Image 1 (cartoon, rainbow, N blue to C red):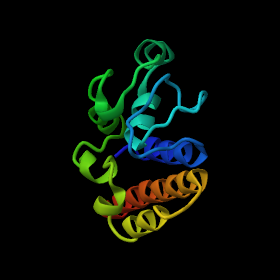
Image 2: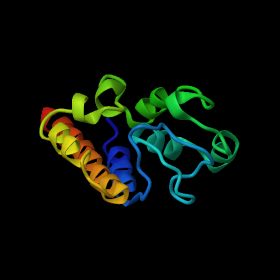
Image 3: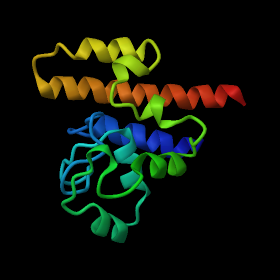
Image 4: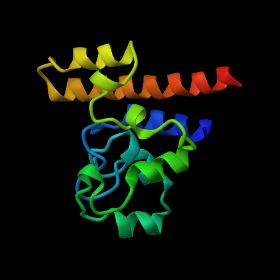
Length: 142
């Protein structure tokens, strides 16, 4: 696991106003600049690209379910050094079902929020906390 990159993704997601675990990435490209919704894998895959690659690969393409840019989860796993972890845990579109407690329960609790902005902020915070949890697990395993 590349701890530095995992923590960078956690920080980016926490700061993002458009985090969306249901999309790899949507429409015109840069989650940092233009507010493109993206999940954990989408943020990591985007962060793995050079500026030239970002322009060519992420300009005005819809990437729900990985269409348009190739293997977003695979690219994200490789860049983060978590190939053995598998996208089923971190990159799932249903964290309330597939993430471990307490993260799955916290996510589930956000589904009833009336404001979509509040829901996304809460979910981004939970996702960042889950990434930090995985990092801590990795450190403790050594």
